Each structure stands twice: as structure tokens, then as C-alpha cells.
Image (tube, rainbow, N blue to C red; front, side, top):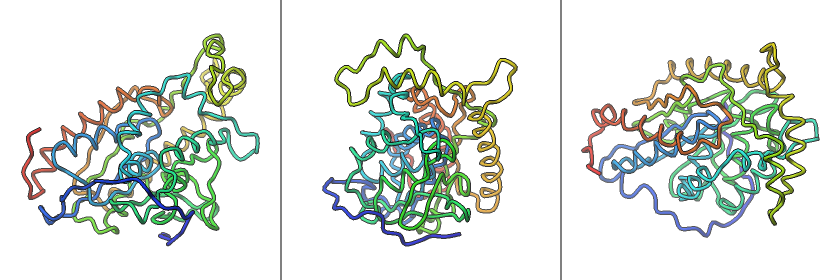
Length: 333
């Protein structure tokens, strides 16, 4: 396992962060929050964080994998409100406009528009300067090494952590090519412990996701109605490409046989599930929050409102168990 001390890009952070308000000093227990992978299901982490904070549970360290890195990194940077607003604003059409097709041969989606969206909020944030210690988990291409990104550009580390192989292009960090950390550590309990956490709360959003890979689709006519409307991307051109290309990769055929995209995602889910079971058995968390959402697919990013609510409920169910172990009182909201 590799935990490199990597510097990414240097920049000064100018944003104020007011996080983890006096939590450690009052309870003498350092809480770690391990936010797991799960693509669109990762929006549930927002609801989990809201519920934990509302009950006085401020994480002292955070480790995130894939979408867990997105939400966890935004929280550590003081941008939880912004990522929630972004998530709730997504519609089927807007999700499609963020899926810029790649023609390099390295992936289906280039990810430049998602990169731009992240940079708008996180430009200048360095991981080592965050108020809350944070690590994003990625996998090194070629070696399979587990890489803990704890220094340098926050947005670059997040992009490396969610770069699903074959869907997004690998991300170069220093001298390494990296992709999705779910291949090695889907719910990074071990990383929280390495960061000094005494009590680790794990959040698993893929407990019932096996073989589920929902895909967002819009009719071509609906897409074409949107026009450009002065927006930075030509949605009409993208709609045509997406309507022709994406279904060929993701839709199941009439005989229910998987296409390239659905086969890759199913294979990824199976691998992730097996690795997760092994990792949690080897180093179980002190408490686990499991968000069940059987009808939510990996690409249902436009269903953030429902997914966030599921995260709220999952955390609420877990609170009695968490407070039975922590030496702090259950705060009334």
C-alpha cells in the first residue's frame, strides 16, 4: 500500500473554513469519517453529514473514495452547501451537458466539464491547508497500488479518486497515472485510522447495488429544445452525439445482453463488492451507516433530493448505536 507525500499544484487558499467546532477538545475522542464509493449514490453522504452535524458529531478527519472524496473534500473545504446546491440542481439534461465525450481512446467521457465545475469551487484549495485533515483514495494504473492523496490540489485529488476506469480518463498526479480508488479501498476505514482517528464511522452506499447500473436518458427532441441559451456548451450538438453514442455503450440490447458500458460497470461493481467485504472484515469500523436505495442506479445523479434524504434517514437510524459508544451526549436538534 502506498501513501505518497505528493505535491500536486501549488496555490493559496483564500476561503474561510469554520469546521469541526471544538469537537475534539470537548470529547477527547478523534472521530474519523470514511465516505465510500458509489457514483450517484454518493449524494447520500451529504445527508449523512447534515444529520451527524445536526447532532453534534463533527468529524476530526475524513477519508473519501470516489464520490466519497467529492463530498468529503467539499466538506473539508467548507463547501458542503455549494456541493449540495449543485447536486440538487442537476436534471437529466444538465447531467448530459456535463458528459463531454472523449475521442482520445482513453475513456468514454473526457471529464473536462466536471473538472471545470470542480475548479470553480475548489480552485486554490490545498489538501494540507484544509481545516479538517482529509485524504482522497486512488488506484495507480499499472501497479494497482493504493494511493492516499494528502497534499496538493484538492480538485485534482478528487478527480483522480472518481476516475472510473473506461468511463473517465485516468488523472496524472505528479509522476503517477491514477484512477478510481474503489478498486483498492471502497470505504477507507484504514485511512481514517492512519490519520489518527480513535472512532471511525464508515458510510457504505453500495450495500445493495450489485448488478445495478441505471442510465439517464432524454429523448432527442427534448434535448434539442434546450438550445444554447447563452450557455458555455452547445447542448444541441452534444444531444445529437449522446443520443447516437451513449445508448450503444450503456443500454442493454433487446435480448437483455449487456453492452460495453453496462458490462464494465457490472464487473466494477462485483470487484468493488468483493474488495469491500474483505477490507471491512479485516479492519471493521467502530460504527457503520448503511444507506439502502435499491432503485437508485450509478448514474442517477439527477435524483439527488431523494438520495440525500436517504442519507439523512440512514444516519438517523445509526445514531443510537454511535452514541452508545461515544462519550458525548445525544444533542437535541
